[in-house]
Length: 69
Image (cartoon, rainbow, N blue to C red; front, side, top):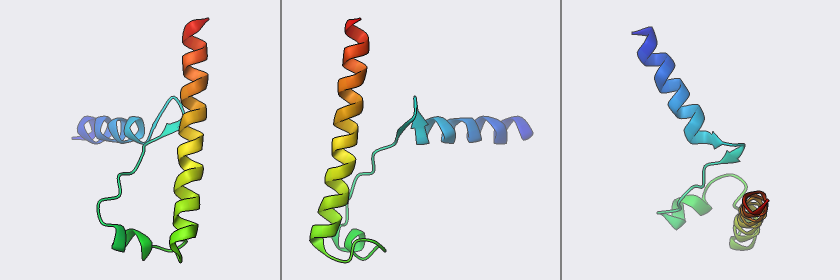
């Protein structure tokens, strides 16, 4: 049983961060997403999402540069 728990924890850790990259979250229900703390207005929510998107693009650029070397 402990092996199952350990392996599931490893899978969750891998799912959360692979090479330090956090898992992207898909927003299915916009209304519930906007009700979450920190998303008081649509502008603040879009700003957070845009910031996260820019981080992913930066990571993508770095990984593609590493592959070229």
